[in-house]
Length: 228
Ligand SMILES: [Zn+2]
View 1: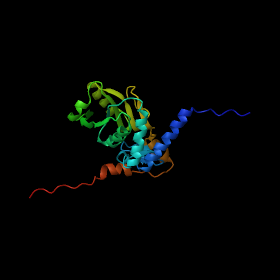
View 2: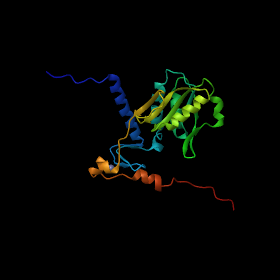
View 3: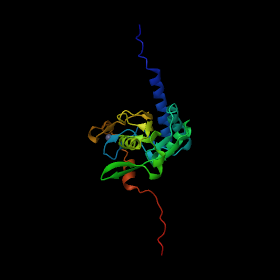
View 4: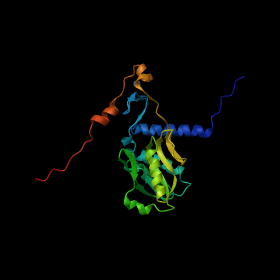
C-alpha cells in the first residue's frame, strides 16, 4: 500500500513553472546571478543577485515580460501606466503597449529630501492624472515598497484611482497596504551575516565584484570642452 503523494494545487504548480521561465529570461539578460556567493553593499552575503541596470537590455524579452503583466491586468480598464521612475520606463512602455485599454505612459521621479525618500511627478503630467483616472503602477524591482507606497499616496492625493501594481520582481515580505500586486517573480534572497554564512563555512570564494563596481568604478562619460 502506498500513500498518495500530496497533490499540489495545479494553479500553484503553474505559477512555479512561470516563475522559473521568468527567472531564466532574467538570467539570459545577464541581470540575474544565481548559485553565487555575493557580497552585498550592506556587508551581508547572499547566493543570488540582480543587476537592475541590465534588466531591460533585451527588447524582445522586455516586450514579452511586459505583455505578461499587461495580460494580468487586461480585465480592468487602465487610462495611465505610471512608471515609478525612468528606470522602469522601458518596461512600463511595454506593459502599456500590450494592454487592451491602450493607456498612456507617464513617469514619476525618485529623490531624497533631508535623508528621506520622496517621489514627485513632473508638472506636465498633472493634468493627465485627474480625479477618477485609472492608474496602473509599474516598477522593475520592489524590495521595501517605500517608493511605491509614496507614489500611491501621491496618485490618490490627485484623486486618481490605483488599479494595481505590476512588477518584474518583488520580495515576498513587501506590503503595499493591500493593493493588488502582480509580480513575475516573487522571491526573497536568503542573506547571511559573514559569521553565520554557510557558503563562507564551506570555503566558497566570495564574489565582491558587484560591491566593488558600485564603489570604485565610475560610469564612463565625456564632457563638452570649455569655451576658450
Ligand atoms: Zn559568505
